[in-house]
Image (tube, rainbow, N blue to C red; front, side, top):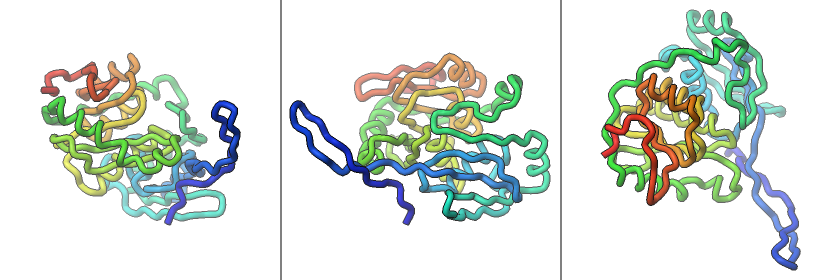
Length: 264
């Protein structure tokens, strides 16, 4: 079983009390995504659900257009990290080589490896039909999420991305030290399960940044709920792609920034 946590000794100070404690820490390891033998990206990630991460990243970054472009996927654990070795179609691999980039991703990174300003402004696909969601369903998903964040409950150091149905029932939750990785893992899991992305919404435990909107649009997610605020660029991208954004979501309040007609 993949070890997603380690123990560390620390000195707990509470008032005048000092006590040594064992504290669980989230594990992050280098993960290399390799396409047809070519290493495309190395990122730091939580070493769980790597197949979901590889599939979700491949779609959200435009390496593939759909699961049918991914011919093979093998997750290999090495002493220095993890490799997700994938085989994509010749057409997709040719496109990848044209815009080939080497980068070292970090958990807080947004547009790592983009070589030109124009490459940072790619057109996003229009998201298709999205359901109308009740405020009560969003509140139900928010209330249920903490109990599904097992790793964060232990470590306090990871983000989550979750998928809920129209009633607010959580169907899938993925955790990672990086908010982008968590959403990529969720997108990959939804693709692998052939989940209808027009029959629910995504919830993220982070700010609503541009790249999260980008990944949602690429993954066919039409409604994204975030517990923190969006950026201006994120909202511009959401309007262009037809993604409904609900942010600063709390049990007693939330702000609908785009697609308000979808919230009832």
